[in-house]
Amino acid sequence: MDLRKAISGGIIIFLIIILVPWAYGIGLNGGRGLTYVKSAWNLKSGFLTLSGRSQVFGKVSNNAQNSVAVWDIQGALSLNYGITDHIELALSPIMYQDTQVGKKKYMMPGDLFLGLKFGSYNVTRSSLTWGLSFDTRFPTGKESNVAFEPYSAGTVTWGFTGMLSYSKDPLYPDENLNVDFNLGYMNYNDVGEKLSGNPSDPYSVTSMTQELLYGFGIKIPTPGFDFSVEMYGNSFIQKAPKETAYSVENYLYLTPGINYKAFRWLTLKVGADFRLSSNTDETTYEYIRRYSIDLPNYPSWRINFGLNILLLPTTVYNVSDKDVLIRKAESRRELFEQIINEQRETESAEEELDKIKTERRKAERELERLRRILEGDKKKTTEPPPFN
Image 1 (spheres, helix red, strand yellow):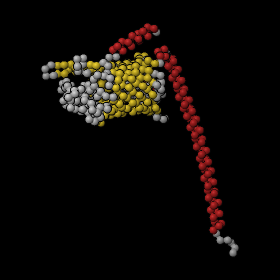
Image 2 (cartoon, rainbow, N blue to C red):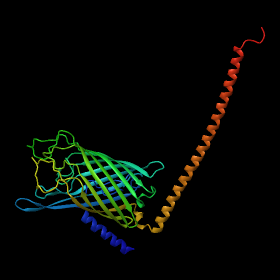
Image 3 (cartoon, rainbow, N blue to C red):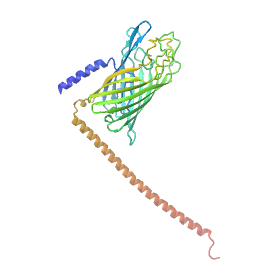
Image 4 (cartoon, rainbow, N blue to C red):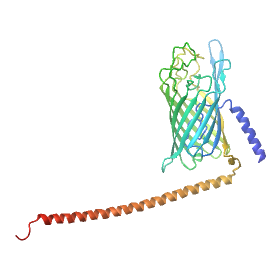
């Protein structure tokens, strides 16, 4: 057992060393859910997870004079903590970002994301669960408006996402078929910003850049692996100036992925992004650099890989298969007791309803009897007397 722990610890340290500088930040979902599409289910109260993901895209640009290999790598870590069963806090700093500009052509660290998620609200007597998350991006990085990446303005950006999840068994959603839907809104708060960074640039943002974000995903879990496929994209409500912004087009991606459950506390992830949207380029490049006419605005493909580590509670490291089965049985017992109590409450409500119906019928009979008595008295007072 000690040897296993030592090997596991070595694997974790090795993976963290690799993933810290390359862990993906934009759209990083460190909590429950898929690569990009969030689940309406929250972490349980007291649970703390550390997630990291890398994404890599590369292409050779064939210019008129020479060929240049262009790489786009971005990464982040995410700490997610279950404050309660329905409230989850997420802290996601970008650790590395290729910028393609300057001497270094990268920045460390990048922007910081802060999220608050309200979730795990079950729709009564159904397999649906809903949630809502609020997310803010703080411009802690030196660069913004990065080529080949979703739009950023170097401002405090805010937005929210609604989540709806279906699970075949809501009691154990991680062990059954899951379907997740996301719909979000993003406001870049960028009026007056000069995206090129050039003081002589006459173009600045005149109308706040806004967009809708959406996603749909399916996860098929097995004892050792989770297989998933998801689609996600955006639709601008108001675009940034095409003269100085790289990413002003809508995008749509398809992402298949596989998760390997190495331990109860460690999951390894790998997947790929394939762009389904067209390669239309709306940017006019009047005050920003154009790399090459054969390079896309958004990567046509990306490789992503990462991990998820459960840090708290620490008791999970010593839990045996027998303990897991006992806990499941206990949770099943709680469910059965809840069903029995609900049934008793229903039966009691039905008895009360029967009593109300009986009393109503009695009242109706009393009213009918009173009506007849009143009609009889009226008849006696209106008819002439039998003798004059």
